Image (cartoon, rainbow, N blue to C red; front, side, top):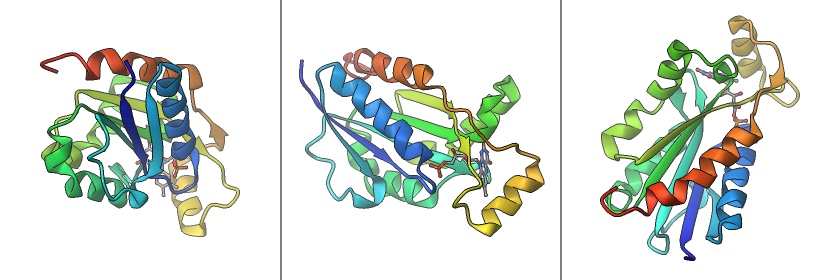
Length: 170
Ligand SMILES: Cc1cc2nc3c(=O)[nH]c(=O)nc-3n(C[C@H](O)[C@H](O)[C@H](O)COP(=O)(O)O)c2cc1C
């Protein structure tokens, strides 16, 4: 059954935008019509039957524009199926503690909405093109540059969404 789904993302350096793109492609492959947009470009979510929203984690939190998106549309988001995901470089070494901390990046989001599904993905650290301030912070954490994104994990997560999101009572 064809459904119209919005994948809305925030992204400072593009790695979360690419993950959102992969989620959108997987949903399209499953026969859905998908719009994949930066949260800042979304001004109406009424055409969509479900929404997937994602943000990278910066200093333990979703980017402010992603939280603002959720706040702005919280009434409608609470009436539609909703999946959220967070992308953090720390997730490249997945442990319970790291997963809990990555999940806590969405604490503020959970004040406004009740997502049916939450995803946590490893991100990318590419010093090229990064602001000096951001680079300093990453250096202080001792992070080693790399791309830890696991495309098959992202695809599996996205492929599992429709049956969860579109099951009555979810
Ligand atoms: C200043 C700064 C702070 C960050 N804070 C976190 C963090 O708290 N937890 C985490 O897992 N990753 C953190 N990261 C890593 C980013 O979440 C990761 O690089 C992500 O892929 C960036 O997404 P983007 O390219 O869409 O902006 C941080 C990166 C920077 C530059």
